[in-house]
Image (cartoon, rainbow, N blue to C red; front, top):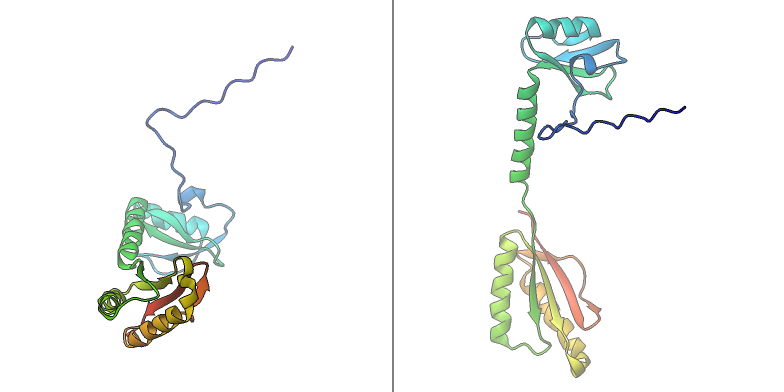
Length: 187
């Protein structure tokens, strides 16, 4: 007679088991020696048992920082403090990284001078802010016959923006649009 298998217990409501990004204390297995770093610790290579003893004496945790190193690098630190510092550093890096936006500027094949100057002024502002500019000439219906005018317009646009930006490629025709991408100059 086969007995029914017990159902696996569902985790308690409100308690979520988090996966720990680093191994700590007794979770560090299969290691004979570790390179020990941290405050109030003489840096060097210690046996695993000696490293655990040092961490216990200071009422701190032995946290594996670099498991792929030979021997693995471990730090003697309070694990919660370590996680807090790591999270703060990641948040700081995210805040310092600037997201580059792509701003679009649209022309017709027969854009007059005033509109051109107005759009040129906006493109200069966008490039100075560090954004990329996607400039294109849109051809409607039979205006595709004037693609040379569109190419000349974009070439002039790139030339006028030489001081603040540089084109990533020459203008190319994609369907009913002739497109050029401009990136801000570093400096």
